[in-house]
Length: 241
Ligand SMILES: [Zn+2]
Image (tube, rainbow, N blue to C red; front, top):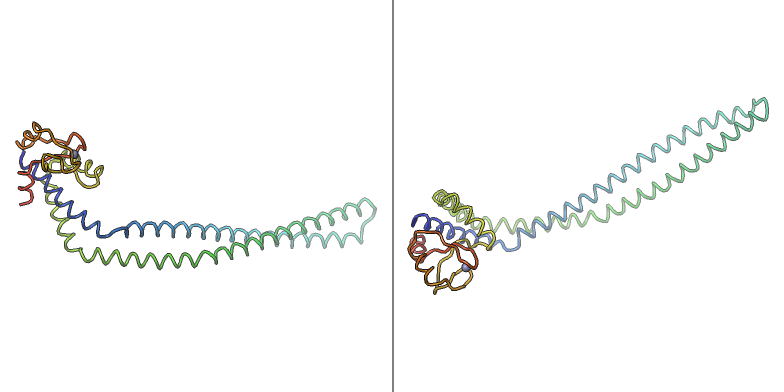
């Protein structure tokens, strides 16, 4: 049991050191993440605008071809006007010609609107793109700063991680998951000692009867206030040694 408790406290000591290294990074990891998110959003917006622009160009092409086809037909109708045999035929042809004029007019107006849209989208894309470049520059700077910090402590971190792995193997699986759960909920501290009769995690007094039981080092106790695992000073000293 003593080994079981000592292993847990050793794990906490290693994690404390790893947490300190993590803290040296400050808000850089979050800043990098935020910049990447913003850049993704902007890139997506640009892509959407480009797609919309492409679609408007395709629609314009299609309309232009349709106009050409209609005008070609209209030419035939106009030629036929010279060889009509009666008013009924004449009226029918005139009606076709008028109708095609209307369609051509409508398509031309639609194409004008599409050309305006395309121009507007181009300006919007031109407007946003520099922002993306600025953010890219900022991201590179922050990443470089972060890498510098990580690199400075790389050897130390590798050593700690190796040691952690080694200690983790000596911790009981069930204890490990309990420890990790408390550690996550309590911002780092899963196992603590009793200092001046109080839980050093939450500073609440541990009843003296409970202190006696904990000092026997034969059972796993949790602080009744914060839920952290409590170990005796004897265990802490053994782990630190
Ligand atoms: Zn506590």
